[in-house]
Amino acid sequence: MTKLASNLKYLRKKGKISQGELAEEFEVARTTMGDYERGKTEPNLEMLIRMSQKFDVAIDELITHDLTHNELEIVRQDGLRVLAISVDGNNNENIELVDTKAEAGYLDSFQDPEYIRDLPKISFPNIPSGTFRGFEIRGDSMLPMESGSIVLCSYVEQIDQIKDGKTYVVVSEEQGLVYKRVINRKEDSKLVLSSDNESYVPYEIKYKDVSEVWQYYAHLSFSDTKSTFNYLLEEKLTDIQKKVNEIRSVVKKV
Image (cartoon, rainbow, N blue to C red; front, side):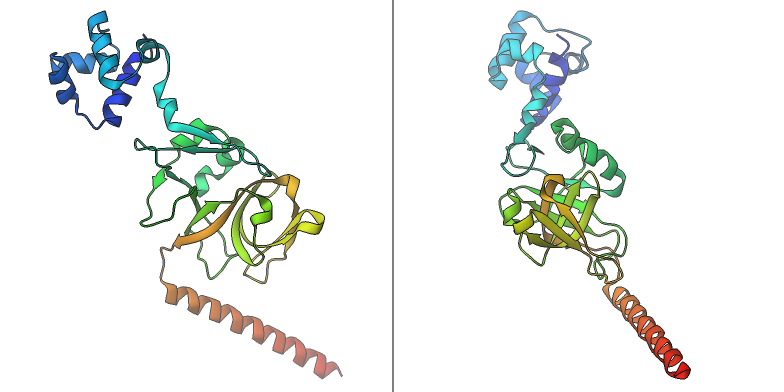
């Protein structure tokens, strides 16, 4: 009965029942219920029947299946690869957060429902229905979007749904996980990815190399917007001064 302990704990928490409440309902000591959940004590047949009826789960599933996998789903879409999602106790999709520490693992395991289930979860109020995921972005390629911001994105089911000029998180083996502004070149089955920071050169990626695409919906920023604006303004002025100096050097030579 190796699965019973974890299944009992999972079902109790899913039903938002305390260990004491369940022990009282089953007419056993709370310590006995704790032993059931720790696998130290195995219930008799009568108790198994009561558990089965309480949680509406067949006895064989209760003792041989890992019921926590019921939280996991796989969504199969045409045009892009398999999407793994997780759901909460009310069957609502979770919003997983992929931070910079998890990025490398995400590239290897984004199709693994157990990996997705173990990602941290975040909440955003009043978002529409659909599949959303949060991504932490790093670097200055998308300024004024600050490094460390969390971008909340909705899942793109078909590549032909990508709209020119909008921003997306694009996942691929070659480029990893990037947040870029995208042009969809359907005629040659490629995406052109560009940064809002003009010092970064745009590049192309073929449809067949794209694993996932997520469209920007909202973001959380954790620094002072005015400071970011001042930084951008200072960089722009520095660039202008550099170009002016270059022009002066050319004029002097003439």
